[in-house]
Length: 180
Image (cartoon, rainbow, N blue to C red; front, side, top):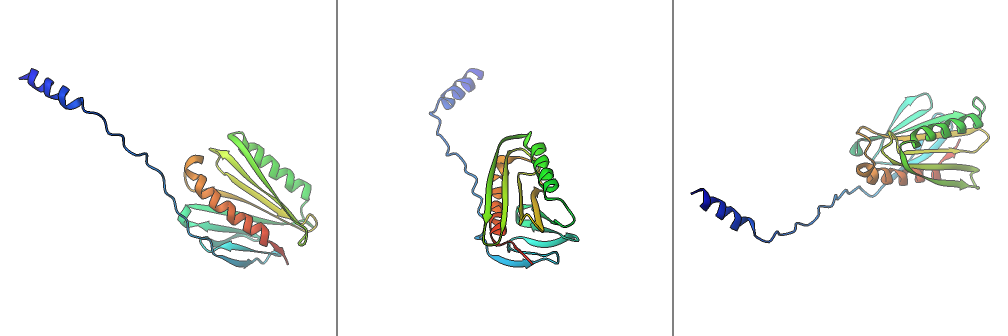
């Protein structure tokens, strides 16, 4: 009886395997629609309506991307009270600390001569606690900085589509940033 069961298993187990198609993660995000947001702290910009703006400090705003389980934190500094060199050094130190876990750091510089605005958007490739950082300034009176945080374990491969989606929103933010 045991021989019959073993023989049946061998015969049934020797069939040609059928390959299964590889699964692809299909994340879809809505086409962004933008709306202007003015702050009490001398700046305005356009933000994606997928995000909900919330004030978190006197001159700080959080754009809450609830659908992405992420928050984009924005903080404004008046350069009459803070040194631009110190703020840029702080930005670089933060990137250096987070970049230790990175396999790559990609920077996109931004300049708008008409509005006297320059800035930078940084993507940290790797399992960093925060993969997207940016700043914008007119170098004389105004400086704004921001970073994206997910309410999830840092796994760059899984978060990359959402990071790239928000990066487009950050680029739009920098392009439409105006000082009052």
